[in-house]
Amino acid sequence: MERFLEATRHPALGEALPPFYAGIVGARACMRSRAPCDLSRGIHTNVPARTIAIHLTHPDGDLLHKLTMHFAYVVPAGSPGRATTGRPPPGTGPYRVVEWDAHRGGTFVRNRFFRSSRARSRGEGFADRIEVGLHNQKTIERQIDAVRRGSADLAVLSDVFAPLVSQRRLRALLAGSPGQVQSGPAATTDWIFLNTQEHPFDDIRVRKAVNLAIDRAKVVELAGGPEVGELACQVVPSGFPGHAPYCPYTASPGKDGRWIAPDMERARRLVAASGRAGEHVIVRVPDFREPVGRYYARVLRRLGFETTVRVQSFDNGDVSNPAVRVQTGFVGWAADYLAASNFIQTAFACPAGSSFNLSRICDRKLQRQVDRAVVTPPANAAAAWGAADHRVSDLAPVVPLTRRRSAVLVSKRVGNVRTHGQWFTLLDQMWVR
Image (cartoon, rainbow, N blue to C red; front, top):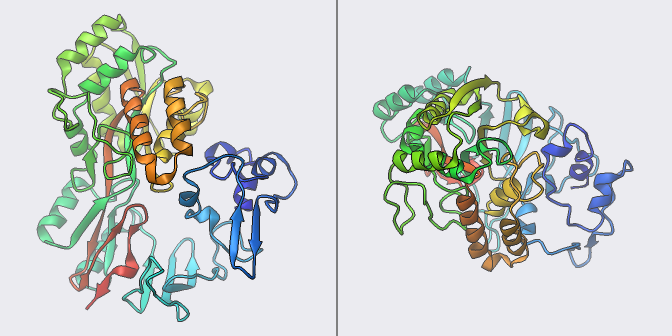
């Protein structure tokens, strides 16, 4: 945790790392000072009692979620701060790492010191040994062939970032290997951001018009199909605490909050009322989302805007720089932990100049809702975050598109394939014949 706070001082990383632990006593000093970080005033340990006390400067209803993140993992002093090929740190779960290479993968074997009990949320694993290789688009076909031959048991077809195979290939696998393609929803939402400080999206009528005009079902198809994504009309994903179905941007909106179809007629009326028709819009789109980006540009043209599409590589970070004044583009947010706050507070809270707040929005009512929700006890926080999520929808600073799904191909001898809401396929819960 101290190393994480020290990393926030690095010029290249400070804006890329949310201040998850800034509320711990002494954390702000760690983030400002060049001296080694010291959280001894904020974190006290009692060895005989086997307890750790964390002192905060203000209430934080998400602290327990944040302590589950890898930034807060307990490791021996002097452990390296990044993945290496050296000796791995010890683990406390049902498996231990016997070797690991950041470029190739590694091996896990049973941890003989692990004991399952009712007090533990994690049970014992099934396999005695797990061999893990890294996946990418260059090797995916070899991995698929290995699974179909039975020399491997799992190949990743789509992770939380993007599909690794084409839609045609995925459907061929569904037809040719029935029951072997498994998928599950990921803790993500993809959306189009609309810069509320730039024309034409500084007018809420234009932002609402874009939300009404987008055909979300078509976006799902362009993004890879229903096997790797499901449509979204809100920022907080379905199934999350704090998600209350709400979709005012659909034809024939109903009380069930479902998206039904686009409403181009109503969208055009809003654009006409705004007086912004004819303005020029530059759409920034990462290369792996180009089909969706070009479709979005066509929608803008149908609404009466002149449009230019600029395709850029995934690592081109100028969209997060407020000085660049990007009008609109694409972003996908994968939850750091399973809480609605990670979507709302990170991407829409004040100040508007935050590198994560690409819509450059700072709404006082929304900020008050966020401030209340943050200090609400976790057991009662869902309603507070649900209200904030609805406020985001009403302000329309983004166009929610899809919630991604992870997909894997498994061998015929595999069973009990389970997907964690955040951590992908649970390899230790799979069994093999």
